Image (cartoon, rainbow, N blue to C red):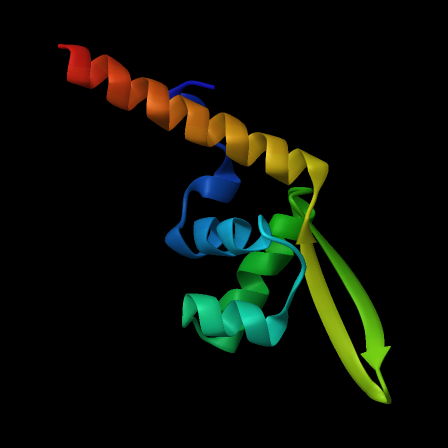
Length: 98
């Protein structure tokens, strides 16, 4: 991955925060809201975009009788994030060597 090839999923602060939060495991909407401090509408919109890109998987279920939606990072999302971090590390090393 090169700097000009950064995936759309990593081009906003909120999308990066959502993807980063999912690296440690599944999260509920409430979890993501607490982590990101973003509004419901912003989170919903960004999760929808990440789903469309294939980076996030949404699962709907119940806890007792209450509906519960969880989100997890997909294999594509995890690998793309690792590639993105590796590219950033490489850029830092190259620029520190100058």
